[in-house]
Image (tube, rainbow, N blue to C red; front, side, top):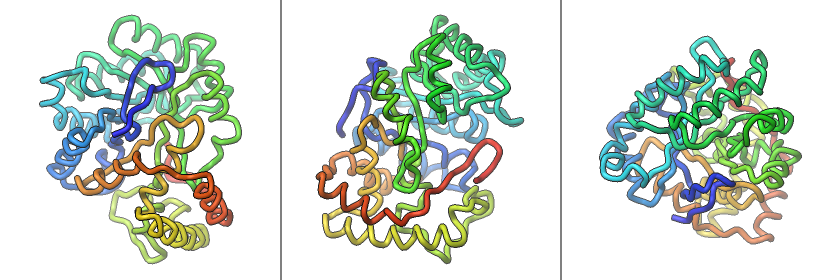
Length: 321
């Protein structure tokens, strides 16, 4: 597994991070034993970076990750980097100092660790001054409860406000072939300021796996069932694009999923792609994308294939978009 320096954090991590959003209940039911096996297989395969969040089942995902990694954490705590996120409560966004302090304590208990390697503000909270959020996280870092501080889903202006109080060490934005808005300002800002980027949803929440088509239905509890990206003309057009991408990928000896992940990793400014999986086979296949080298000609061809794609949104604390 290839590794990289994560911005200016000093952390060296695998270029693929194992994401756990799918283990919090927002994607429907799953086999817990299979998920634990997948997490452990990820570690065996060289992935040492794991990303979760308090809002993924409000502790459920963090507890499952802590359980799966317990043997590794007991043997050598520093062998894995654990990132989690706070600032979202059952009532919605809340990045107030009190909520963040309570969130860190909750995450520490759920994960079963004494320190969180990277703590990120999950979503900007318009009701709380950014300076207050940043100040609270600096205090938590000073106390030793968290080692590094990042943000997720922030824009440039919000990062600048945050950085006026304490550095933004990492950013976690949504980024995939059907969602490229961060290319205009966010990624250039990250490059200029040494912000480590962990791109989430590189597979467009499943659209870029090739396993979704116009007839796909989603299980009860799966947020995608209410999202515009998975219905109507947007779905039809993007499924057609995925079929073209799949043929392009097959000619080069890879799956469309691996192509999509490799494309994200090839973008300037991106350090890590966060990939979720519920099975060992899926995480093994995704991890292989870190070894894919796309040429300039490949990237140009991918841009041409996706020129007619519909740019889509995802899920927010307020619901599916």
